[in-house]
Structure formats: structure tokens, C-alpha cells
Length: 260
Ligand code: GLP
Image 1 (cartoon, rainbow, N blue to C red):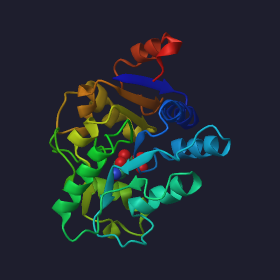
Image 2 (cartoon, helix red, strand yellow):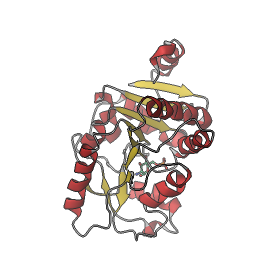
Image 3 (tube, rainbow, N blue to C red):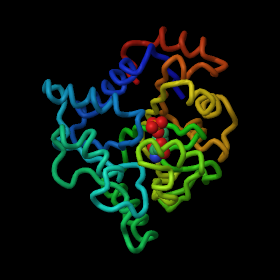
């Protein structure tokens, strides 16, 4: 796992966008994995800016969302499929139908999960998966206790995650209890994992993810088993890392040809 500690959110956004642009330049038909939550918003802003400047096209790319609330109406602004449309898709040039998410309105949830796994596989798998992390160490909506080899399925949110996400709703009672999420095994199949985190509230989860045991108690720790995982942090999110100085030295001495 490569840990990169940067000055702040703009630097994280720029470096993550560099990785996406480099991928789409070498492989315009690449498959992106998109995350929701506030963490990737700076990255999306930077990608929109670079698209407007003519530096990157998504015209041949495909994208898969990590997760979705169960039961939110199609026009609900917090449906993740709507969020990704509003924050990224509407400003760039994805082809119609190129962005998919799990169907949280399906009358047959297990079938919807199986269909989603099949759609990702048929697209050739995800090349670059953007990730955030929850304060309890969840990735996508894989809450503590999730199997490290899990596939797309329904999950129940913890009280902590519902409280964390209540800021996007009028009250915490409006936050659904159930979600569909790519499993930790599904996510681990992506060829490159790129996790971004900022702020002191994430510092404990980041420490557990990078330096704690690989454990279902911290689902994000599954990144330790991935051959190409990159973690971009600000100083606050990195503030509990035991080996922070080593990560800084490593990045400062990184050969320029290597990329992320
Ligand atoms: C949600 C999402 C995750 C996200 C996490 C952290 O629960 N399902 O994909 O990483 O929250 O969100 P934020 O980036 O807003 O802190």
C-alpha cells in the first residue's frame, strides 16, 4: 500500500485526477469505479475542470458506482445514482448508459446484486476504483463485520453511519437502514484502488486501515491485501499514523517514472 501525505484537499484532488487522466489517456475505454460521499467531490471538481480544458474525455469510458440506498425514490436527490449525476456525470461526456449503479429499487434485491456483479464482469472489471472511508472504517457500505471476500449484496447501516450521513437528509430518521453495496471482494477485484481521506475524524479509521490488523472490524483494512492500493491523505487524516515519516520519505524519493 502506498500512503501519500499531502498538504490538503486541493493537492489530493489534483493527484487523484492525474491518475484518472493518465488512465483515460492510455486507455480511453477504461472502466472507472466511482464513490459518493464528500471525500471524492474535490476529485470530481478537478476532473470537470480538466474536461472543460480539453485534457480528458470520458466518451468511451464506463463507470460503476460502489453502492446505493435501498428504497429511495428515483427522483430523490440523495439517491447515489442522482448524486453522481449531479456531481460529475452531467458536467462531462460519458455516453448515455455508461454509468451504472446497483438498483436499490429492484423488487428482487438478490437478483439486482447478481446482475450488478455480472455487469461489472462483462465490462472487463474496474481499472481504477476511487474510494472514501467511513469513520468506522467502512468502504462503500461494507460495515464492520463484513466478509473480506464479500460480493454485491444488501447490508444494514450502523447507527454511526446513519448519523454521519444524516447531514445529507433532513433528519437521521430519513436515512435508509438498508443499502446495496459492492462487496469487499468485488472492490478488491479492481486493478487499482485509490482511497482519499481528509480531516481528523478519519484519522483513527485510517490508522486501523493502514497499520492495524487485517480484520472485518475495519473493513478498509482489506486494502492491505491488494497489490496496487494508493491512499491519499491530508495531515489531519494522517495524524495517527505510526510510520508517517517513512511514508513522507518514500514519496519524496519516489522515482518520477513510477506514477501512482
Ligand atoms: C458513505 C459512502 C462511502 C463513503 C463514506 C464516507 O457511507 N457509502 O462510499 O466513503 O460514506 O463519506 P464521506 O466521504 O462523506 O466522509
